Amino acid sequence: MSFEQENFVYTKTSYRRILEEIKRIVNEWKTVDGSESLCEKLKSVVSSLYSFASVGGPHEGVTTKEETELILKNTTSLLFYVNSLLKNQRAT
Image (spheres, rainbow, N blue to C red):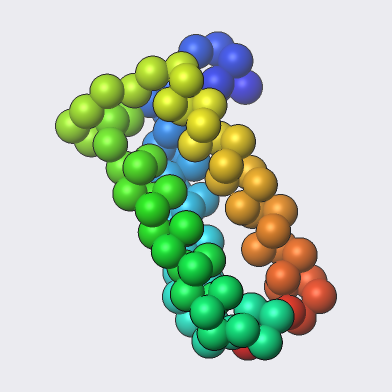
């Protein structure tokens, strides 16, 4: 709702907090689908998206609709993916 109301700073901050939690979870993992390499790549994606989401919002930088939408959509997809990994016990 905050995105639709064009409150991009709040939206970005909320999604950054979600990414913090995802980052905390995946950083404990050693493998995904039996692969250490895939696990490291996932950690890299999470870290990069978190870093990207850390510019602007209450932090120094610009917060635009397009940038916020990119963070929102990618974080949502990542959340569904991590949830599937957890639910199906595909991460160790």
